[in-house]
Length: 313
Image (cartoon, rainbow, N blue to C red; front, side, top):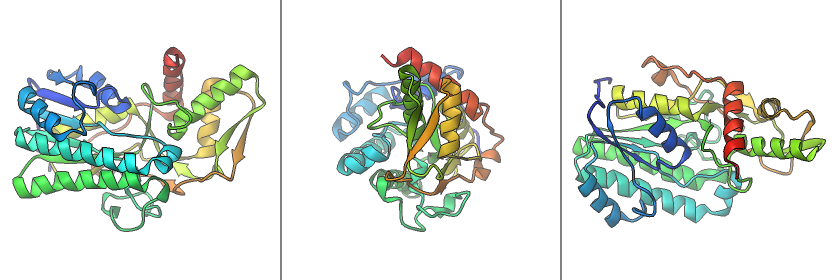
């Protein structure tokens, strides 16, 4: 279903504009003839339903990109399950309902590929959702994101709201979180490799066996795909957003070492979890709309490393 939605002249709200995806959306939307609306967390806490409803009633956005979320890697998800479940459920519920009450014309809810079963078929089609058990290390975040998808579908089914959902693969790039306790794998490896290089270390370490396979998409490519979906997709089912190719974590670590200029060894702590053995998205639905990524992984990692060097303080 591809009836066009014209962003020109529209008031467009990016929820979570200071996050990695939200900031990329702000950059991408600068090329559209629209009025961009944002609100800081200290002005409106998206976990507060009354505050969100008041803000929507006043701001009256016409289109919403719902990229706000509490995010983190394996360690953070495992350590703070209540926070990840509660915060993300509250954000999804409050923004979606407020958008409906304020007669928003179109909303795009942003999920995550961790919504899929741990042992989903590869590449993972959209209809694999809810067909098996989740990866235990991030099931709390995944459950909240699944609820967000279903909420968008429920408002579409019951009220005819034009609410859609997109499921990005592993994202990286400018604005990423490089804190080793809460980050995802790509920024964590960039920081490890950089610090090993500065220290003159002989090696840096990766978690697990290195055999797990992951797909990585530069956040600017993701933002471009999301804008295309806002403009061109109106379907009930969510849409996978990825590049259609994956690498092992060991291969990723070597690409990071190359980008950073680290010449030493890469060791493996096999006492740490691998997570799901593989997560590669089937992006047939997205590519059918004519979209393809522009930034390959080596160039993207070099870009992420440049951003880290300029902003690590």
